[in-house]
Image (cartoon, rainbow, N blue to C red; front, side, top):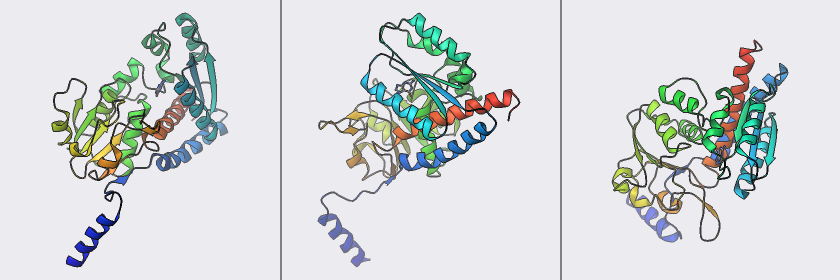
Length: 307
Ligand code: GUN
C-alpha cells in the first residue's frame, strides 16, 4: 500500500495536469451505435415502399443555422432517410412560411418537419411551430408534444434532452431517487429535460438566472445538466465527487474554439462521468432527430396498414 501511494503521488507530480478522474461519455461513439439501428429501421421501411422523409426549412442566412441544417441533411442521407432542404431569404413573410408548412403537412413523402430556429424577428416562431402537424413534429417543440411529455403520453421528445437521456442510459445510470440539477429553463432543453428526469423518478431541481446560490444546489446533485449557453457556468468547486455531468452548452472560448458550459479541465477531475464539447451532446441531438423521424414514419406506416 505505501508503495502504491508513493507511485500515485509521483505520477501526479510528474504530469503537467492532475489526472482526470471522470469517465468520458462519448457522444460520437454512442451516435454511431444508435445510427446503425436507425439505418436498419429506415431500410425496413424502404423495403415496404415507405421511405422515411424529413423536411428541413431554413429562413434567412444565419451562419450557425446553415451549418446545423447541412449536418442534419447529411445525417439523413447517411442513414438512408429521404430529406429535403428548403432555404428561403430573410424577407420571407410569416404567411408564406405558414403556407409552406401546410404544404409539407400534406406531403405524404414527408414524415418529419423541422423549421430551424431562430427565425427572423418579423416571424412569430411559436405560431410557425404550432402550424406543424403534431404527427410530424420531430423537433418536439409543438405544444401538443410538450403536453404529451408532461403527462407521459406518446409524442415526440425534443432531441437535445432526449439525447442526454440516452447518454445516461448508455452508462446504465439508474435515476430513481437520485438528485438531478438542471441549469437552464428553456422550452427546448431545460424544461423538457427536467420532465424526462422526473419521469425516471429522479428528484429534480431546475436552476436559472434568478437562482440565488447555484453552487449550494449543484453540490447536492448526483446528476447535473448544464444548458445555459455560457462558459464556465459549472466549475470543479460546484460538483460533488463522482457526480455525472452533462454539458449541453455550445460556446466559443477566447481562442475561438468550441466549448461547453462546463469547465471541462477542472470538473473532469471531480466528476464520475462527463460529456465533452465537442463530441458529446451535439452529435446526439442529430441522432435523436433521426430517431424521431423514423418513429414518425413507422407510426404513419402502421396507420396505413403497412407495418
Ligand atoms: N436551433 C438550434 N437548435 C435547434 C433545434 O434543435 N431545432 C430547431 N428547429 N432549431 C434549432
